[in-house]
Length: 276
View 1 (cartoon, rainbow, N blue to C red):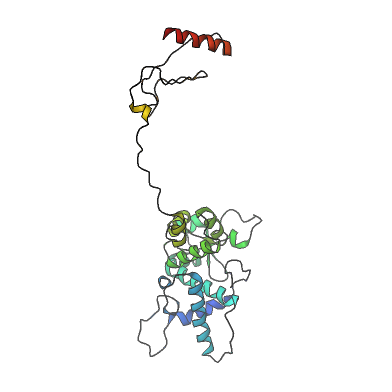
View 2: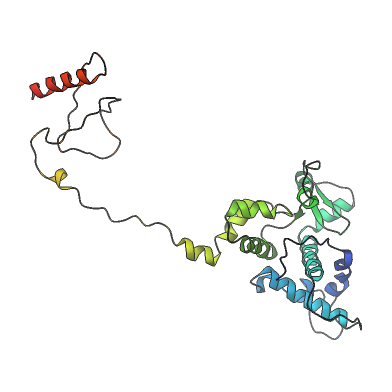
């Protein structure tokens, strides 16, 4: 099975050529003037990212074959990768149309300044930070911008979480930021991971406090003073604890010692017994 996130395939510009196929429906088809998403599909109808990408890639190959192109065999990693970037371009143009217009017109706004937005040669919006000279990959230096409340983003987060064997929020977010930037990423990843069925099944529900046990017998039985005693020779001596009681009858003895040797302790203990 092709691992989508370990591939070193560079995205080509061929997915940009599908804009005409996405924008206008075929003639004679009774539908809206423009599709809301590529080929009329919606991310909300898919349970995993790889399923969304594979079905989209098969539809795209079918349309290409209508042009008498000879394409056969299973889907390739390049087709899956190009389909993924086609979806990202669609989402960015749908939600960041104003930012794309301002960038092309060399204008600026708060989002562009805060995230350092720029458009690469493939038409993808990327975030530019202060790590341009770091010894890391180009995708980590300039991650692709995604919308936090988009269904595609949820599928992407869950795909990383699944491929990383259901790790926690911090590790999932760290791997995602090697290629993508999601505003409020930590809270977004945490929200998605809370819906993971496998994690919920194995982690179980919240911890339930056990029933309060009955008090021990020595706490409810009447005894003479000093039946149960405790010694805190090394201090400090707490006159009152925060919560709870440990003895039936409580008393504190303050005895002055010359030093902290065993002999002085025995002398002090003898004086205590003599007073009783």
